[in-house]
Image 1 (tube, rainbow, N blue to C red):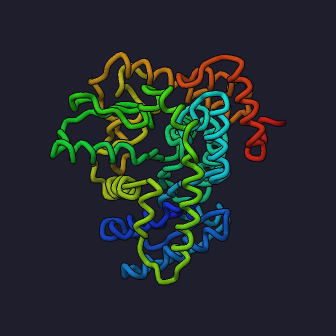
Image 2: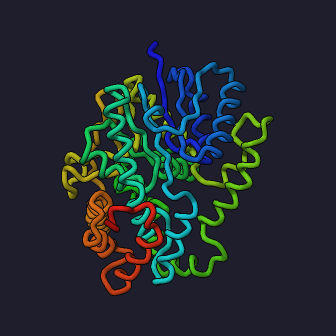
Image 3: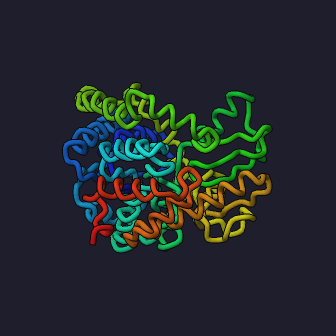
Length: 391
């Protein structure tokens, strides 16, 4: 059986123990024998890397685990690259959440203005990773990306590179889990359509929207909740991470701590490793993932990256046709796709003009003097991560 090598980029993430648990669960189906755990934060990498080694040892897996701070070394000869990066770490997220609220706009890390600034920081870094993969990784290697905003990143990678890539999110698998718990089963012919964090299961009555739709359908209520909250979600996560890292550093810990569930990311590893299993073992199973549309969603362009049911195998990703939708879905998806494409262009070109156009196109933001002020303040706040905007 072919031996596999994996690289985890952003291995200092608190999600890493969850991912390692997935590798252990799929040890029979996926013969990973070598892991490059890479992060630029040496302290976090050492703590989580050593926990990963203890997890593998406790599970009886004899594999090579290297802790690496050099990206090229990490990508050398790998078959699967798992991306879970956060450019600017939690302090940048907290700024993404707080600054828009000053303009009475939603502060959320993947949707609206906050997600836009995260895209500007993250898309260029992901594109750099894909360029290095082409030089250093196996010719048929895959990027399995969970870095947010996942949909915008997929829009960039799938249209501007020829790297094999799956843009994943744990929202779809959790939506299906909720439906199964409520109804006892999920209809085998269910349909799923949308963009990342803007999606619906449409063959279950009534339509079942992603919980992210609350930011669109109850915009004023969500803004008010954020304004009235004592702390942003980022500040809560920062406090939780400090507690988790004390546990991660405990040399007696060799499993994922239960408290990690409070951090979010439920079923993250299941979504990732089940997809890899379907690709590597050519199972041609159906998974919900980001893919180029290629006519599957009739009202979207062929090169639009959408989040739908796809068949995964050694030949890649086959998007499956969608037929259940309504005018509300069409309108929102088309509007947000315009925003996503402009966001990619702004991120890669460092264009303030396209950045402003992207924000104005987003249904949660729109045009106005406040939008210009917001953009200028957010760019200045993240200046160290956005050099192209200040050249």
